[in-house]
Image: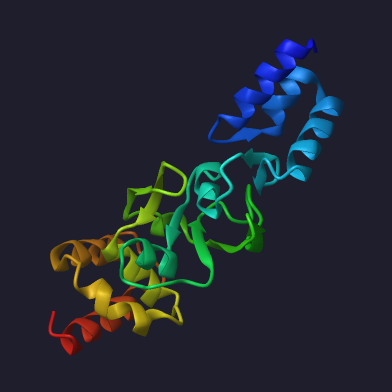
Length: 205
């Protein structure tokens, strides 16, 4: 590849949101693509989000861009909604875990990220929130779904995020989501509904 075209291609990659190995290989061939991506990673210019997908924006939140059906959830979502002061591990919920992406813990840009599987029936209730550090909109569970997911999964930081989360939860929207779980016959919907009703009664919401 001529130097001018090479420089232009590198600038294109480093100016993108995300890019794939397949895309790079389509331009310069597989062998050269492997070398190029290796060099960019070694120089710290890009991070790998999931296998074969990279970003010059060195933030764990970018993984949502790499997984089609996914959102930031649980304590990570509570943090972005201002209901938690900090969260130790960023959690991504997706029905595609084990299908196109490996579930479990990984490190992205020096931060811990957990990819956790949810059922297709539970994939709803998210908004797009602007994350300043990456200048991007990312899918994040809304306050109501964040509460439901935390109860449903027995999230250990639930008690810490409840006070802040309940201040911004819309009760009618919350019950709408619980009805949706019932309609979709989500396993454990009765237990989840009862626990949430107990929480609302306790906090007089």
